[in-house]
Length: 458
Image 1 (cartoon, rainbow, N blue to C red):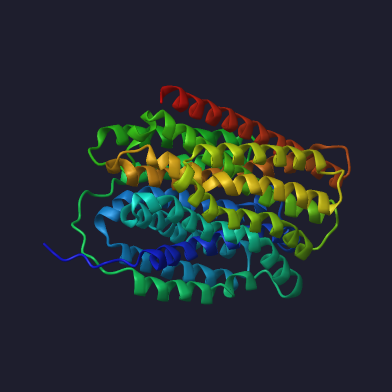
Image 2: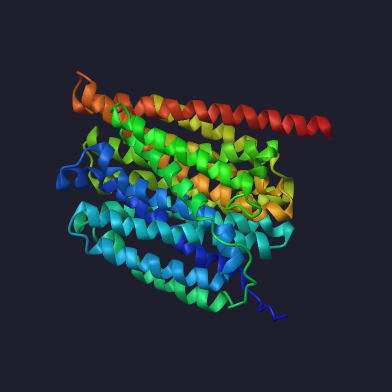
């Protein structure tokens, strides 16, 4: 036997969370630069969105490995690998002379975040007392929800005054701070290695996620069906290996839990909305309202700041009152805000769009992290790591799908409408938000039903 050294919980969560923060910050900061990148590299809207999509795709592929990684490597080793990969990605993108190298740097950042994000939640679920779990989950999601609050403004300022390259280099000190925190807070504890990595399962995941996203980005072209076939083949390979292996990459038995499925779905809907609006709104403000990248970024700040502030507060509310009130109130407010935002698009001045976004983000701040906490609390302890991996995998993949979906919808109207480019962008943006509103309404109805059923059974 060996002695386990004590972990310093709060700084350990912050150290891993800072890397996720940096990834989301770049993600939302780069969304503001899309019109600049489209012009600089002569790209279409559906191509430039791969700046976000390739990052989220790599996270989606790496996160399912987290259960295997946690069984075979110490959390300190995983943290160090993640931090080094992220730093390499930042330097690569700062020096990137073309779009291909820019994508390479984003790929490295995706691998890093794919390790760091489940590591953060693994630390919370393993070391935080149950009566503090909601608060710690709120702290964990705070690190990632602060990023959208400042990301667009950060990206807008640098793009307008320097260059988009500086979005990356200015984050190097942040990653070094994370490294110092992690070295202090995360001890080197030995791990008894169990199981091996099933390469066929990994191949299945790569084919599934890559094929699905390429299908969406090429939607409407004949070759897109080949990509869909590749994705479906990957899903089949992954499923067959999962049910055959004693220790699969992910235990899909968690999906037998109906409550887990519902809260997972609602959580993913929010991820759709977050990534969808972070693409739609900055581009709309620049293309249709003819504002600068700085103004487009600044417009996102009030709503995202509200969401970030409410994240840890909502966790405390859950710890004290339970999940029903913050989740249902949050979903209702988010639905009202999103519907208003969709209606105001194209007819309201900038302040109206900001108000709609703020109202929606109040609802999201109250319920977003609580949906994950509540879903995880429905699982037994032996399935916690698998549930954590599934939440984080599908969170990133749904974000990539949302970005691709809204980009394809807007690009379709821009290229096929007889109206002006600005008018077509407005219509495409409203249709994209309308599709996401339908998902939000389904989520709201499902949660109302689940809590009503719980009340009746108790």
